[in-house]
Length: 193
Image 1 (tube, rainbow, N blue to C red):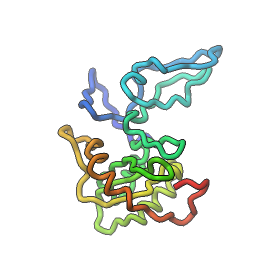
Image 2: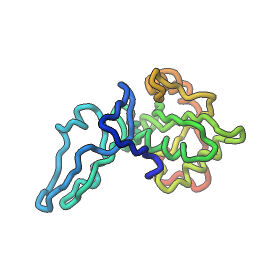
Image 3: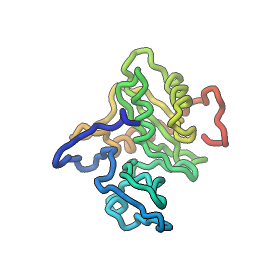
């Protein structure tokens, strides 16, 4: 989604510690046709805990990698991985949402489920409206849809103004564990939470 990116042309871009900027790689990759596989296991991305979209790494592909999220932010729900940045990007497109943060909360069946804290930009925003919006979003798989949505006055931020994920996990996740969103119309599909 091009609207989710900010185009910065500068000699340097400082990203504060313990924060993350969704971006593309500096390096342009060109995978020769005769290559059978590409391994990024010892790359800079893997060593610093950044997850990149490796789907395009196939013979003959050329371009930049999309940086998806930080490994320590990943939510493991069942055998599937959810990256908070993806879910937050969908929530932030809703016209009545001022801010949003996503975190995994413990679940006895799935290990974790996706939980969203949302700061409304309009007084009439409801949890049901957000659930329906996420269900209908073409770029958000059903298993990534938040199963817990809480409307809050503020999203916790760190000193640099970035979402404070440590505080989210410590303070908000335990409170969000009990509250679950009921399925919106269209069913769950595939037995997912």
